[in-house]
Image 1 (tube, rainbow over the protein chains, first blue to last red):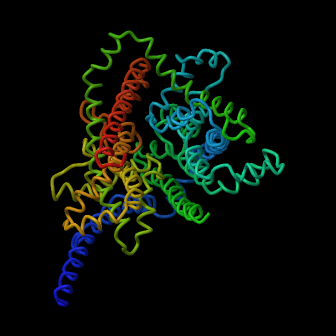
Image 2: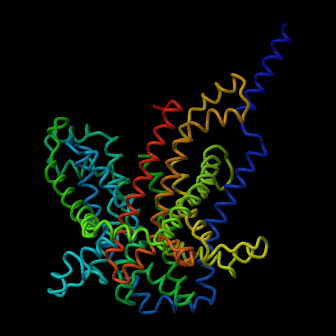
Length: 287
Length: 275
């Protein structure tokens, strides 16, 4: 009797174990496939950027980066990000405040519209600004009479970048602030704090990591955007080339060191973004 | 405004949100619609039915579909491994998944073209071992779009796998199911809607992708020319109407496909009892 029970228990226990865990060969086979894929598709490309950039040594690397066109491209990229990121950050906070703290008609439509730029091809994002401000565009005549250049000039690049990076901050803040609820803010307000004081002392400390996260992603895209900017820029060397466009122009000129030295700066930016992203996710999880 | 009357700033916040949205997104996007309204129906059909345009649509949607499916397969395996199995270096690999999101597409493009060109690191090996040329062929577009698509799949499947209730697996196994049955009949149906979302996101992104593709594609009309590139070509020839008609068609087809995917997803959720 005893022995019988024992055998049954053992048998079912083993059946359970087998159906809950993958066999050894499946486990390591899948790990092998996953790691192999990541190494081949993600690690090798990163290594290759550095290999190509330094293939003629440090000297050639620095000479390529110190070219006037490369420096102008870096400056333009910084300027574009410096205009774009603050504008979209202010918008993101305002939108998240309106959407998560109040009920109003058409709210879900508004939330959908905010995500719209993500589902538009970068090339189309550039095209719409050409249609607006180009020579044959809506405002093209007026702008050309007043001698203001938008397309094939810096304002067009800024506009296209704002469009592309429009949703980033709002989209990080809205779910978080929705989940947080407004009890803490209501408490502060009912104790007599002003609206701004409540925002800076109650809301902001609660959302700061998510806000930084959104700003980080917005900045990475603003500095790295290629398709939309490529349509409106006109590729004028030293004037309307951002760093990604400088990579393209150099690559098409068979200037390997020029292309990959600039690419290494952008790849470095991507790695810094990933590291900060992991850090912010960790902070957010602890907050 | 019924929920919280005491919260301040509703009017300015909403007014600014709407103003900025209209100024930056809606008005610019509406040019696409107004510009194409200037075209007559016959002109529109003539532009769209041009063989070069039709070929580019076939290339774009075809390569995006294949790439999204491959990314779906590998993305699923990667998400599974990252959630279920402990192994050294896992956190590092997990962080690396987002690289295609963070890396500027032009950089991804020149790197992939360099690796896969016939004299490149992998291109040379693929050529000598299998006689396969990747770069400057439609296959190159697929490779670039797999790179772009992989994080979409991993990042949508991962959280669903993480939250998957393992008691369901235990219940199935105590009723005598084998591991394969547990996977195919319990785990997979529950993960499938998320996988479908990931694949459709990768597909939608792939159709519009430009930067990572043009360097590796070869851009041969009728063979490896993608729709976004054709739009740019038309623009460079000052054929604004043609560019607009193609762009609007691409947007509409993409939205239609996403709608179909959403309906499919609803159906899959209903079937697996999630709604």
